[in-house]
Amino acid sequence: MDNIILIGFMGSGKSTVGRCITEIDTKYKQIDTDWYIEKKYRTQISNIFATKGEAAFRQMETDCLKEILKDENGHYVLSVGGGLPMKDENQKLLHQIGRIVYLRASVDTLKGRLSGDKNRPLLQGGDLSDKITDLMNKRQGTYENLADIIIDTDNMTIEDVIEIIMREIQ
Ligand code: S3P
Image (cartoon, rainbow, N blue to C red; front, side, top):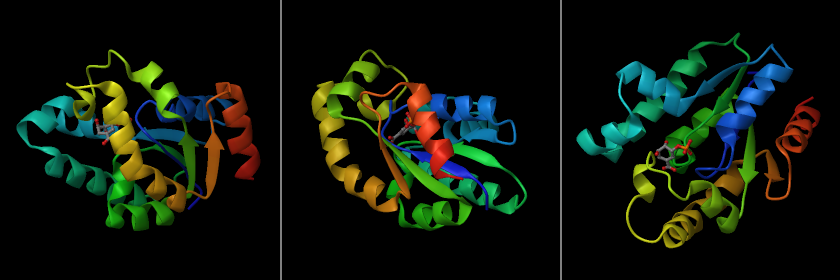
């Protein structure tokens, strides 16, 4: 399938990069798994975590990937929630869906972007740096193993990132 998948930690720019790709190449339509779930269940991610729990949210993410797989003719740029690639089943589905691009960013960069964020349940309470570092230690290896393309975004503009993606996916 001719789709681009953007993975990475919360705050790595997946949704923004996804939107810009659809503006540059109108063949692509964007699906963001968080937006998809919020629309389908008509509520916010933070509310799903609070009322149904994380496991239920993770199942919704898997269901979303299965829905996308049904559309064999679509051209999507798919930005996925930061925790979605951690599940084995999702990793297999992602490989079936398209080319996987990891937008890698340092803890310092992410901290700058995520400080004050109230929408991400896994980052609420406690020290933000510690939370990002802990989660990143658990996730980084999976992101790297899963990716077809890794982009170090720390010192790049969005335009730089998009140029690399468009060049690499040709
Ligand atoms: C999560 C990342 C969020 C969202 C949820 C859980 C995670 O998406 O899916 O809050 O586990 O990293 P973004 O990566 O788009 O912020």
